[in-house]
Length: 95
Image 1 (cartoon, rainbow, N blue to C red):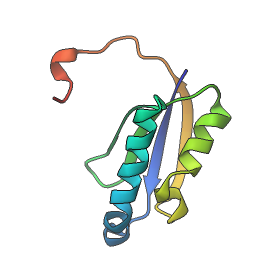
Image 2 (tube, rainbow, N blue to C red):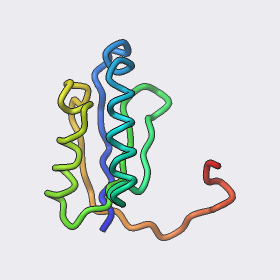
Image 3 (cartoon, rainbow, N blue to C red):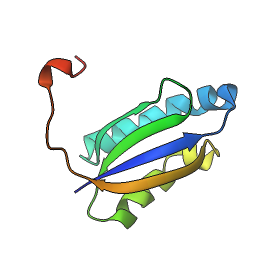
């Protein structure tokens, strides 16, 4: 099942940028294990949306808590909700 996490970041761009490479390596590892559906930051600097593939809400939160951004204090607060994709437009998907 998919779980969407809306995550608020600290407002310290230098710290976020410093940890971003390890955060992205972690997300890449989740893709390789089929535990990440998609993710990306909000353009306004608020934080990010991460959609996990997990067996439970607890498992999704464990994936979030294992993220280097969480360990570095980049994640301030989050909400995780079960999410079901009903529509998608393949023409609008990034290449």
